[in-house]
Amino acid sequence: MQISSRFTVALHIFTCVDTFKNEYKVTSDFLASSINTNPVIIRKILTQLKSAGLINVARGTGGIELTRDLSEITFFDVYEAIEPVEDGDLFRFHEAPNPDCPVGRNIHALLDDKLKAIQDAMEAEMKKYTLLDLRTGLKELLEKEA
Image (cartoon, rainbow, N blue to C red; front, top):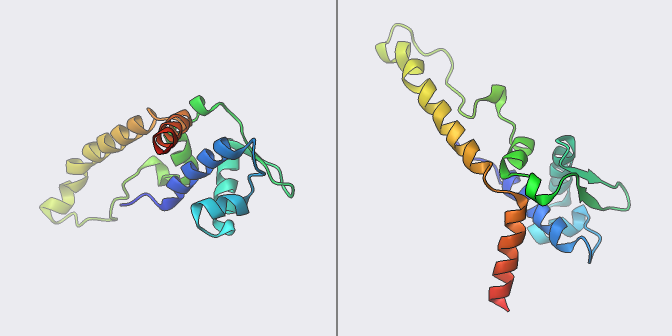
């Protein structure tokens, strides 16, 4: 299992929007140049973020604005928008284990609660971090560079 790079690209997008909103027109081309990827990928992610209600995008003229304050958007909010989990379960279980096998017959009973606990812990941790943490962290890093 691996969370795709779309999640970190989305966090990169939010950080760019916050950092450059008063200096530049933040467009998909602008973002693609910072992220070093194709603008089409950026537009797909922006569509997901907009569908989740996290941003508004002005078509044509460009411009992205957040729908909530940075402190109110958690990493989990972004994760949910970008990496929606099927049926609410992070772990996809292999289908139809053999009921005639003692392991196959009991594997769900062995793993279901543990996998749910792992998912709950990851989600709880993601809810601790907000986009404001990215602003604060970037400011600290830039001050160290100066």
